[in-house]
Image 1: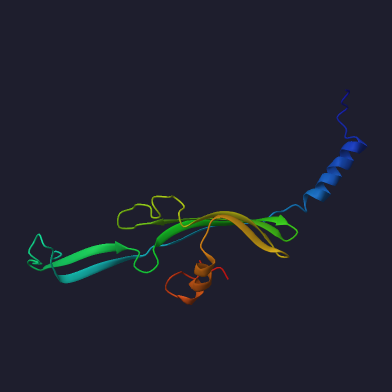
Image 2 (image 1 turned 135 degrees about the horizontal axis):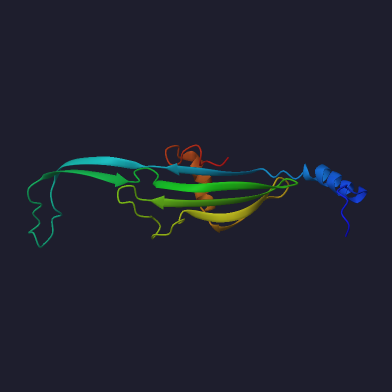
Length: 158
């Protein structure tokens, strides 16, 4: 092939078509990091041991107890939520949500990293949404909006 350093008409046509068509394929995507830290400090006075047969049902001397508890109202959790616009009113969606104990640093849900929710799906403005994976039940989803202290507003998906 002989190269003269000039663009041919075919090269110019491909460049023009690429410039015209390339501008229309902008997909919108977003990933959101979310979370809730729920911890409480407990103080109880006059606490003894549990009365059993072994200790003669005697609670023994009373003590004061101070302790930190994780998950007083809704449980500590963090997660990622994402959406990718595929065009024509269709989006791909995903959620990865993990629960953890703030007082010990361990994972909840039997040690599963994303034990609360882990799902992917397709959402359409015309047909609705279909998702597959570990998800909250429909009862939980419907009742979550009626318990104001259970979920923060960023997690209520209205």
